[in-house]
Amino acid sequence: EEKFKDIVSKQLTIQKYILANIDMNSIKVTDKEISEFYNQISSSQKNIPPLEKIRSQVESSILANKQRKIINDFIEALRKSADVKISL
Image (cartoon, rainbow, N blue to C red; front, side, top):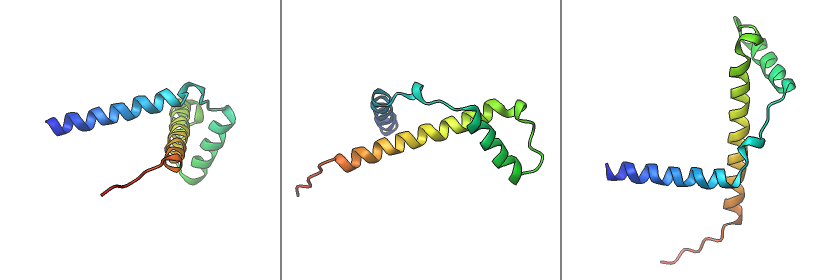
């Protein structure tokens, strides 16, 4: 139980740090991106519902992908700028 609390605490700390340094509200999804994404999946899969029925799901998926990329880029930039010294 203590180990679980420690893991959750670390994850929350990381999440707070990321949110303090990345403006997630500035990430937007355009109608063009939604249409392109829908066309891409509908061309490779059959029985896809009309865009009007799944628009919010498509938009959420695109938004999540953009957020994930921005977070990964941010973490990569932190790694590149880190000055780690190992002392044994």
